[in-house]
Length: 323
Ligand code: ADP
Ligand code: MG
Image (cartoon, rainbow, N blue to C red; front, side):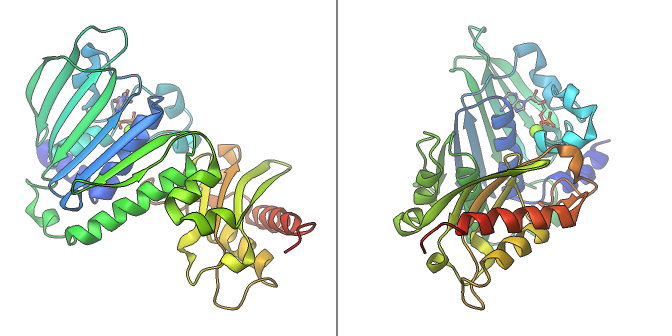
């Protein structure tokens, strides 16, 4: 049983970044407005995610760590809502199978919160604890009991750069949330959560970028896109500044990239790529989810439609602009 859990965990938990991704998604699902992420040594020795969300009721804390346990049942019935959920109840179980995990959590109705410690899938402690509303999860020594996987962790600097990327995406995609990110004791990112997308760009890419972004809002048929696109002179030498979110989740998609890049093509030099932060709102049934949920890639039901939509959205943002 334990071995099975460890193997299954490998599909969900690949790296410190995937742990942070799962825990921050849980925080968002819990309605948090503030999320703090702290890592040490690239997250290989220590990861902490603290949120001010709804917390987990005392009698459900143990259960939350069981495989396939989830409180998000209504979404599971509809597999197409994969965006709005983590791993169908696998994340906490998977993480706890391959690390030393400690969670403190409290709902607003409870007087005392709950502390649970789980290592290698075994509950070590569960007791009452005084804490504020919300949840803190600390994950230590990832893969301590799976040497074969521990060996494949990259250098702390590399793992922490992946986590930093993720934090940047979260900040860009969710200006309405306040993110605090601490790496080896240093505060790296602290967003206000005031809902201003331009402010998020400022935090992540700096002032020059924030000033050179144009707002866009465009809807047609089943699709609606909002966000910020960089003026052509802001273009960069790689695609890392192309940020697409679908229903609030960061996604990579080559159709959308090409459509946006093609719309920019007459305006930027060859070898340059646009800077943008776009959120596509679309019914999940128009997006194919038969890709591994840990991957950031999706397939659209109708690529041509999506291509045309983005091409038109960007082109119409440019027309009427004095550039
Ligand atoms: P999933 O997110 O797919 O439901 P997880 O293993 O990530 O599965 O979490 C299991 C359950 O634990 C969730 O359904 C939720 O009820 C609860 N949970 C996990 N993290 C939090 C959190 N930060 N705040 C509130 N509840 C949480
Ligand atoms: Mg989850």
